[in-house]
Image (cartoon, rainbow over all chains, first blue to last red):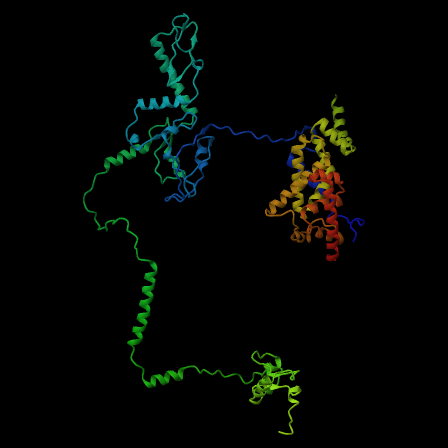
Length: 406
Length: 197
């Protein structure tokens, strides 16, 4: 077939209804109205970057990983809990373990790292801190530390109108610091604030500012977390910093009050825990070999202690034995498998040329016996006389012999 | 402009676009910008060609339908990037070819495009919209014994009537290499067709 000159048509022919249906399906997917296509604007997808609330600086943090929670046997992704806190960008974690890094020990985060301004504010609270009731001073200090991370507040945002002003002299207010972060100097024209008024101003204004900042920043406290706790339980260890005292503290305190050291023996006798047993130095195969030897020894012993059988019992046993000769069914036809007759089966290998040890008889043809030395001739004659070899009768060597004279 | 004039213009706009040549349509696209009317005109003009092109490469109707749909979705999304530097048909064909290749890779990630895929011939025995022409069907089966690149060149040249220049732009290959590839494909197909008979 000459494809260059013979044009072969297409192998597929789709009906027009398919193309119309396909067109309407496509336009529907693209949101194009066929009746008023002018109103349609190309849908160009613009990928908007996600708003990142804070960056978590994980550099220098020593992380530990656990493959599986021994209690719940659950595995949860790292981002799951952190997403509940807010949009948090996490730097790639580096684990120094060969295990599957599904569990992260947050208690290993150092305070230096958690206190960084650009990192998520994670405050570690130890168990001892939980036992001590938090006084107002501590709460204020923590609030101040939280406020220092947030954006510096400008005094212009403070509503000063509600404060009573006595006179209208122009004076520069003293710069006052709000929990470590400097607030810009405010020049309030026509305002004179006395020292007492200033204190009132601090108390009246700072508290709402602190509360607002605490609400705006996702400040959290992560209580000291045991190593076996996974991310799914981590939520119970996280609490907002302005939250009320956790009820678990009271429960722990109550439990500690009730617990008294009981020196009496338990009502039932328990075996004391002996500690971890050392592994035996005996190899495992020795036990298997010993058990096998015991079985063999038991077999021989069992045979040795058996009483000797009587002749009758032996005869009965022999009679019960199955005959060794299996009677062949007589009605089964005999099939001749060999094509060679029975008489010639012995020479069958010869016929088929399958005798590997078969050798041709030692018949030699000596063409030119005249040139043979006489000693050789004599030796050959001796060989033939003793039946060790046979020479061709056509050989000239024997022509000299006179058979009639013999 | 009164409302009646605007409606009349909207009604006559598709007809005007239908009468445009390919180059004029490309010029219209570059000068006037992207519009849904223009896209519908491009869709109606190239829909069948793109479907058959994808069908020749993919053999399966469902796959060809998917590839054609994805092709025109990408045409719609990237129509504003068309600068008129190549022909509009070549541009659309290139998108369709890429979509077909992506679909083949999705079906068989370990595929080697330098080797033939004879197992694909079994897919087309019972499928939709076959013409029933036995010789055409044999040719399609014989195409499965070609490496994908030769098959692509042969399909574009033989069935779609693209010029070597267009195919060179589409496949980013020189025209000389394309001609040699097409020649080899024709010779192989002739042998295969004689064997398949």
